[in-house]
Length: 486
Image (cartoon, rainbow, N blue to C red; front, side):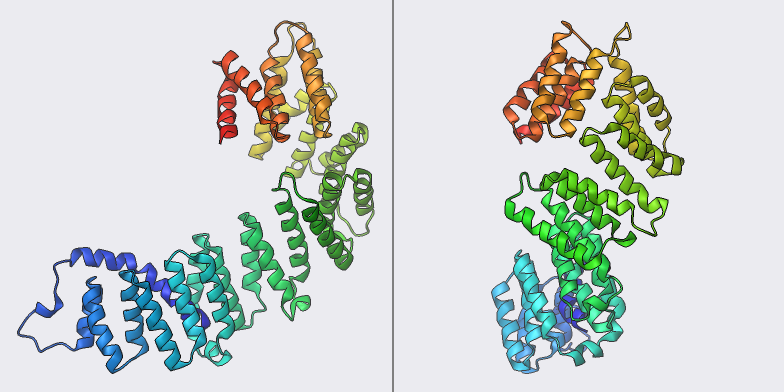
């Protein structure tokens, strides 16, 4: 099987640690001097005992002689790995090329040379060689090695556990080609890579699947198309700010995918991502709202299908200064899924909305219910906001400072950062001192950091650290200062 030829070296490499232990235990061992009364050992057996004992130079001397007299794949491997153990990569490469020339096996040369590059730390070059080797393996060889399936599966599993996804991908491709499984292993691996956040490799893997001759006839085709868009969009969000070309590339990917797959219950995530992309990257908030409204009108959608769409549409309504339509949608989801996680999420959005518009008693009542929610994140967020409201409520039940803070948070969500900063500044005019002052500085520093205005953020964080030494927020300020310096 291709994979054995490509990855036998890796398995032997994994056994190096065992060989090193043996070498430590047997460092005084000399096979040539054991039990002088025994019949003389063959040169081959003696060489292998030297190898096992970690005496690689002695093993090489004998293995080179044997390889000249009677070359074999068995001796070749031991000689190659003896060179690797002493890091004589030049001798190893010379041996590989000489052996490959005599056997006329290009795939064998590429796989072994790839392993040498791997040992030298040149992973990208090694990967290219492994991929070329896979393409060079004759079909009859791949077919003849099917008995090594469990061995290859183990290598694939091991690579995934070690997050060595480049090696895992090569192995998955080889296994799928050998067994004719229409690249199911590669598809499953692509999703693992995506979930681990290696977006570049995930994109390349999905593109590989789409380029296969039988791609459009596979059951996973639609999901691959959607996932490719999702990963490209996720990668775009890592750039701050992205270039126009990067934005245009993602836009074209969305348009092509939606044109091909359509608008239906199976493409809800794709269409939701596109609406969000339109709103935040193309500044087409109204079009994004219209797209989501049309998505809700599609036939055959269940309440569960509609729920995430309603939550996103509610967020957009809130950003477009339409809180009443937003709370209507949040309440619908909350009612439909009272004891489900998405219902708790809807209740949390309603509580935050109430906070933004100054309805603190109603917000706190909802938050107190959510503190016992099943989801840890929602429960923690609810606890934090509930305490924040309680701590910053004035003794006379005045909520002027808290209302301005909530208003500023909403302005920040709407990308009106200058107005948000001004609104937060106005809190300092209400009194000489207020419990909320350090929170105001922290919120302003977050806004400045997101805008990459680090000098302004640093000034505010230093104020918190200096003036609120014994407050928990001071610890957060010191940590964020360290992040800025890094």
